[in-house]
Image (cartoon, rainbow, N blue to C red; front, side, top):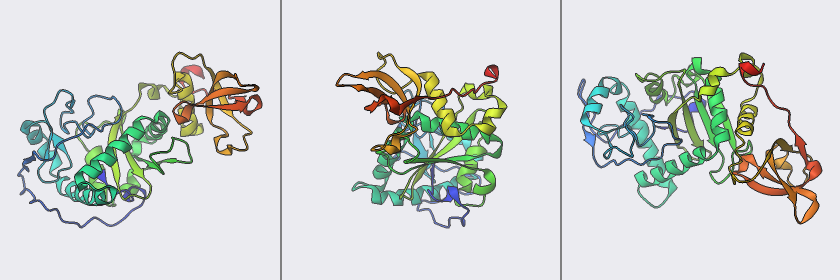
Length: 331
């Protein structure tokens, strides 16, 4: 699903662009476009997930076993594995086809600024890189998931804004926010977002929607994700008192996942403090690898939110963190 990058965060007038392709008549389904080949740029391993980019929009067929997906010949924004799936989806899709086609066209036009290739290839390369970044920063996904679960009754669009795809998942590079239906209704993306939340198989207690935006570009990409089963076991007080970033750090600590070597014994529940030359790392969750062999007054820690990068710090710059109780059975 392609959307305007700015409309998710504020109300704006309805997009009035026209589509190059001929619109289907009332009750008439658009042909499938063989030229619009799919790419597997879907983040994560949840299957099936019909809204992921390289899966059939109707049945969620896995691209690993599917034949080449073909896009709706009118909007080019949704793809199907067969004419049968498109026919089954047409009664629902025709309500949003024109609006999604206009949004998709404007997105491809914006793709001209991304490289020397065609609009389509430029946008696909950007979309792949953006989704890969999200997939490789689980703490950002956990924040998004926590916010979506907390506000799921409001049909929220979770907006993840990234300053740089070359940066990490820290707060200095990423902002995770929630926009409820009451705010995104009436904007440029209303039809696109409605096509997610009003889809026949969307369940607000099972799925949520995420929009990925890169600062400075008028581009965005949306996907649906499945909630982790553990969220249904959260104590009600956690949704009120715990920040999304603290929830993500606690889950990562419990997983013991430093995104680094698995053959190292780590000590969990630590964070950096009192750093001067690298003050931006103060408060960062880290895992203790051991003493620094080149300096007995220092130790080596692994930064959880920076893909397991190891740094050397003084012992006094590492402190224990209190554990956060999350689940009903822990209270």
